[in-house]
Image (cartoon, rainbow, N blue to C red):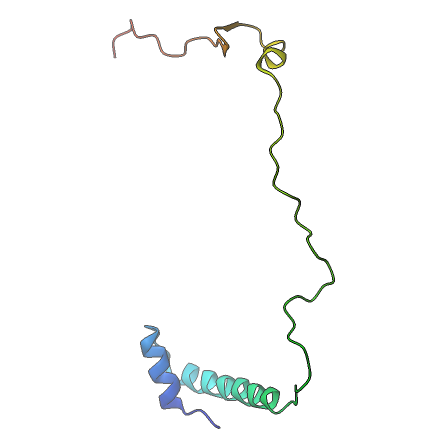
Length: 100
């Protein structure tokens, strides 16, 4: 099944693409080659061949999603220079008393 330049032009317009005549001829040839390759694949007898859903033998490679306890707040605050009421104290960077 050969594809025509008018078919390629139609598909290009559906995709909102514009091609020069030279590009249209180039893409028509390339699309024709792709269609020929797909037709060759459809001729391969695959009767009795199981469906391949994965190309590796790896099964269950993802770890189970389990919750774990984090570091306690008290332990974290040991590394903080200043803290108050369970929060880290940092120096003010905006002084509200200053006028803009």
